[in-house]
Image (cartoon, rainbow, N blue to C red; front, side):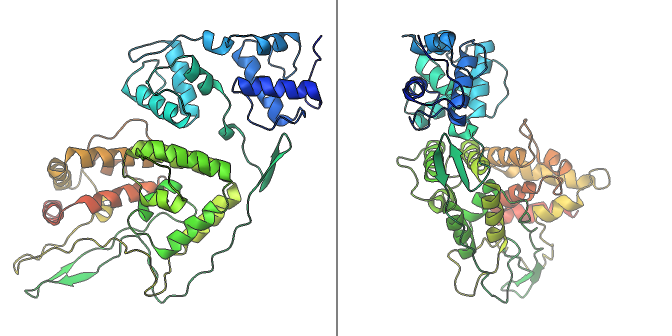
Length: 427
């Protein structure tokens, strides 16, 4: 007769329990014969999936399910294909969303977004990549992930497995007479070959240190690559456990369509937006959710140190293109980050016209990428469809990342588009 096991039990029976749970994808700890918190968590998940009393106690019914030759959790669900609908699809979507692979609505409709999320999940988990949810995919989807364990201190123990994270090495500020407030280097004036002076308003500053996210950081670093940013990223990597880093690199590889995983966090962030934006953002958001609070705080402090010694930056900040202006053209150029603050569609109808004309001049791919960035920055489920809507919904206090999205769009504008927009805006 099998022993009744519960948290606190130990010995060979517990080791057998852990092996059975591990073989079915519910347990990721060490087979040590110690019924700790990790084993309890795995038992609870197994019981819930298999319709057993969810009490964390391993009695005869739980032993029977564990030793069953077939996989009861997979048998309870049908194979899902593109076009499938119903509660099983909703459950698959929710599981994909919980693991950071799906960001759409839980609507029970197996569409393109659900299929793409399944393909990414299958690649990351070494499954056959067919876009279908069969037995093996169901099993992996329902298996507990490391993300289920929320770190509480620099040294966490899960079933006596200690995760040791190295102590952060503080990065001392580098003295410099110049402080760079933004990845966009502000240029106050420029003089053309004909002697005409054109004013170029400074770009808005990046989000404060308390608001910076890994998505914001990647967006900035992929273009600026300042020395202090590299130091902040390297210091952050030193404070992430190897298991979490490996999982992130796998997610990043899948999101970016790379042949091999990135070798470092610095390398990954350098390639931000080289492939699918949403998938890369999901990978970064997943990584941020795994960080210890003190590690994230330290990273934000390091990142906010935007003083770089002269001659030492590892990259060159983005500088807005300076237009060539004829002697008769004294039009002041307007940046989007300045224009959005003065937007008033009721008082200035010409502003709406300027935005509509600018949108009509932009490539569809650029607009699509910007609207995706804006929706993520604004924490919206629906994708924005017009620049007028974007300007109407601007709220940098509530959503600091909106500024970063607008700065990205500014970078994509040509000189002609910027000049035309400024002219239309100031009519």
